[in-house]
Image (cartoon, rainbow, N blue to C red; front, side, top):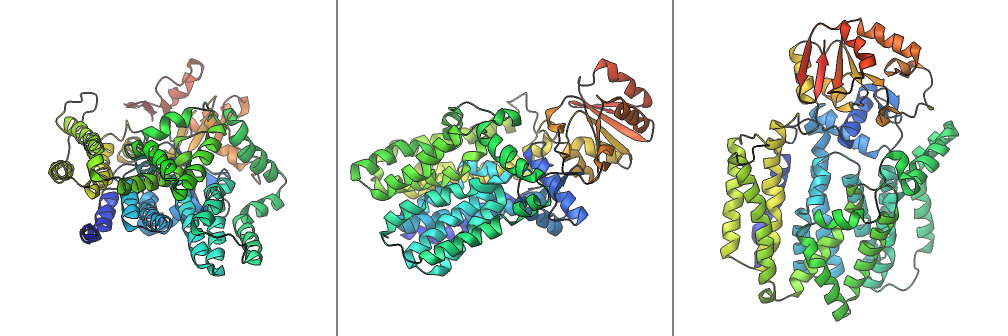
Length: 540
């Protein structure tokens, strides 16, 4: 295929775009801030096995994401760039794996190439690597597991089998048992697609399973041996509640949640899927039908039936969307794809038009002044779309997917930088405290868990609990009562008295607008200055 030659520049371009101003906006007060702060505390304490969040043990997730993030900060400093760096490498590795999986399953380079290009531009995939969570790393290990499984069934050498089970252990060590779902579901379809019917290497399967359990579960068993409370925490709370009682975690969503959000976050490639499935049935294509059942329908039903739902939980289904879309694009004659070509072209042009309106100040609710680099990125995207309009072919239809990672991703860094306060980050507040030389004082935060502030200031803060759910921490694993110094429950008179003493010392009180009840307003009398920054009130 003569279109391959120019693609050697693809990965350097993607790496450049994804790393562009990656730390330009601070960690956001979502899951990202929590993972970043835990990793910072791991790095600061030197204890890589007992993670803490705001000074209190935090065992909600296994250690892999914290270790990777802490390593990034060790290399690049305690900053947002360091926390997100390895996510971008994971993204590039995922694209390679999608290509390798597609080439092995379809035995076709063109289908694999189209799938990799579609995957690179899926909005849900890009969301996962621009905001720190476990999901992108888990998706990487799941994709690697599928690839190693394919390699094993192609060559039947035990080495590939042991690598597969080692990868499953890493998936377990990233997010627990859910990390095994896709790789284990894919065992049957990969066997069928590769034409394997015997059970060769059974002893190695059992040994590999033991290896997986020994490596992947070692941390869990270590903690459970330390205290019976860990068994209840991991099995009943972390596993049972997430699947059956997500309301206790404030994550309960209706069954149809993913029916609405998964298609929206995989546009426009998802538009190919109904036709790809239909064509697979018509041709009785075993590869497409097996992938549809085992990499889309069964896991989709599993995630939909689970009580706990967040949109990134279905990230492991995105490779299927890319593979099926790549398969269909290669199967159909281009003459029958021209309508789809203009649909895709219109979708990406609409995104660029929205950015243009933002750049020109036509969105009054978002005051944004683009820098020169952002303008150049946008112009490059518009020129690419003009080129694609006059040079229509299958490869260019797939290449349009790169508008999101190559144009939108780097431009969004400048937008987020200018909207740090509105983007749910604490960098403006932290910057103010540093400018006023207040960051050395005790920082008291009213009824909010703000790991992003602790991260940005690189110091412990005092959290004041009144009613906020996020401050109901698991403290049963603490060795002593020292944690109470930094988590103050004002519903207890003795802790309220302790807070009053803290407020009388050199300190800063941070309150979300309108969240300090009238009966606690007396706390502000200890301060002579007041500053409003967006949705935050700062007393000092």
